[in-house]
Amino acid sequence: MSSTPDPHGARSRHLKGISITAFGVLILTPDGLLTSLVAADVRTALFWRGLFMALALTAFVLLRYRRNVGKTIRALLTGPQVFVALMFAVSSIGFVVSVVTTSVANTLFIVASAPLFSALLGWIALGERTPPRTIIAILIAMTGMAVIFAEGLGRGDLWGNVAALITALSWACMVVVLSHAKIKDPAPALALGGYMIAGAAFLVAPTIAVVTLDLVWLAILGLFVLPVSFFLIGLGPQYIPPPEVSLIMLLEAVLGPIWAWFFIAQSPSPQTMLGGALILVTLAIHFAIGLVREQQQGS
Image (cartoon, rainbow, N blue to C red; front, side, top):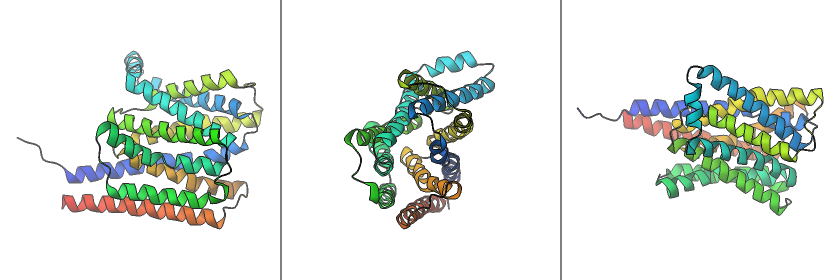
């Protein structure tokens, strides 16, 4: 007996993927605020972020696979898992380097190109077609990012812009591989990526000593915000295409400043509100159209 497609199941998976990824991004949104509260050298902060995240995910993996830890470690040594870890580490380091060496505006606008890179990589490397509505949504969302950060564009230096471009490319590579390799549990690879980040930062950090308050902020980031958010985001490619995962990630750049608005009185400018509204409306319309079409196919 031949199996028939289940449109209702596909719609449910799509909605599940959107929900999981969006929830992960929402958890990630305080990252900018907490990072700004850390007074330590950025390389020192990067070391503790990576180490805390790696330890948290390692504990999760040990608890989850306590009877099959050896098998899990052997699976981690496969090409896709190591590649995901490496791309995650490169994207994390590249983002921090870019923020330090160029304007935040340049960094976030260039990183916003990640959905487009995801679509292009999926098409070139895997032959996957990206719906026109997703391409249009990506371009409109990038326009919204340009509106938000227009005041700072053009003031960054070359190497900072290159680091932001590397961040976007490596993130796009990571989500495409997560999707293509069908990695059901991204936690082991993300843990390895955290150790890579900590190791690279340790080699260049002037010190790993931090004051108590900095350690508190870094612990909140590394033990909860980063591992939980990136684990959920890493699950997204199982259910929705990589470009959509990267597209939802743009919410972090829109909602992140709201934390600063509430807690450290950094009020967003009218441009920020306009650009953020454009991105949010674009995402809402994009996913609503997708869900409606899936419902129509199932009826």
